[in-house]
Amino acid sequence: MFVTSKGIINGVIGDRFGGHGTQFNDHGMPTYSLPFKIEEAPERTVSFALVLEDKDAYPVTGGFAWIHWLAANITRTELHENESQTATDFVQGSNSWTSMQGGSQSRAQSSFYGGMMPPDRDHIYELHVYALDCTLDLAPGFLLNELHRAMDGHILDSYTLKGSYQKI
Image (cartoon, rainbow, N blue to C red; front, top):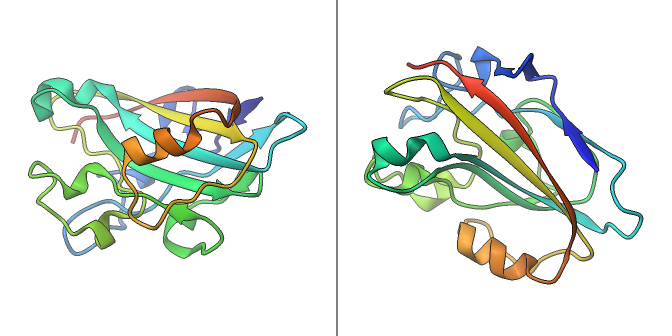
């Protein structure tokens, strides 16, 4: 299985998908989500899940990766730009904008794509896509640990796509 994105060119994430873009919610969270396409998924794949994270955030957050997007029960192989805001055919989890560092935004407002805004230097972001043999029993606003527990024993394959984003 492999994943590509028209939003990541030569390893660089396009400005519109983060703090250099133009679409933000009322708390200042960038909301214009990355597109991606999944190819050559395992034959028994029923659904996909994703985690978009920033491990370069450890020094800024005081010791944890920043979660930008969680989604599960994706039953198609392509998501288009900004579908985090418009699609209703998959469930989305809570991102790190709910944390104190993110302004303690509500879980409901954080259950979408929350784009990149690296404050200290350029960061590398990892989009982890998992092919699963089932759909998962997750409610909107689920947390990263809940996703991993639900996926346990159901991952057929996974792929990580990386891209950098410039400091704000």
